[in-house]
Length: 227
Ligand SMILES: O=C(CO)[C@H](O)[C@H](O)COP(=O)(O)O
Image 1 (cartoon, rainbow, N blue to C red):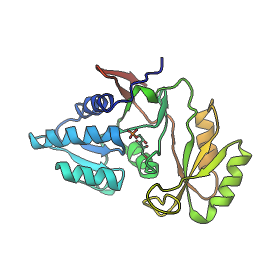
Image 2: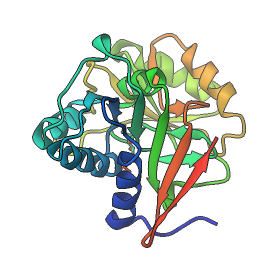
Image 3: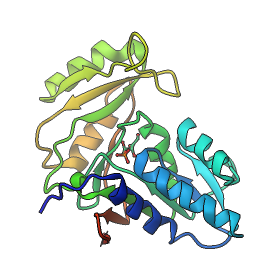
């Protein structure tokens, strides 16, 4: 049953549960978002108590937080993550929609590089079938063509607007984001492959068969789903 507990307390429990998996000497992929931020803070506390870890950030935001809490940073080009901890906008089993923070391109590279991907979420993110709009990062010149292709595929694309500036969200790679509503996604692997093949698409937020487990926080505890 879908939980209605999307509280910060539920997110904190999930984040701390995942942070507790990180072993001494590990390289950790540091996901993006409010739930992963709890894991990063918990890791920072563990570092202060002597844990030896290095973090691979998935975004400017997660890198800045990691520095703030004292986690040494390493580039993905220089280290392979033993484990990555990342959030999700929605999950059905091990399939995820990500990209609410427009960080899904680097998130996917870091998460896919890790030996183990641990997703952290509150129970409001769990569904039987994905139906969240899929964020698609697009080369700016390609936006009209990608919008047309998404409509051909039965989707409804919306250019993501920035909240605190005029104009669209611009990703860390200088691209734009189309949030593409497809309704219920019964075959996420097929849609993921189709979107990846569209010229001008840099990366999309469907993460299929990448997650090893999801730690779901509630107001009182954490449940763990493994895949
Ligand atoms: O994919 C993401 C950023 O691109 C985030 O992990 C996702 O949006 C979940 O964030 P939150 O934990 O704040 O709900």
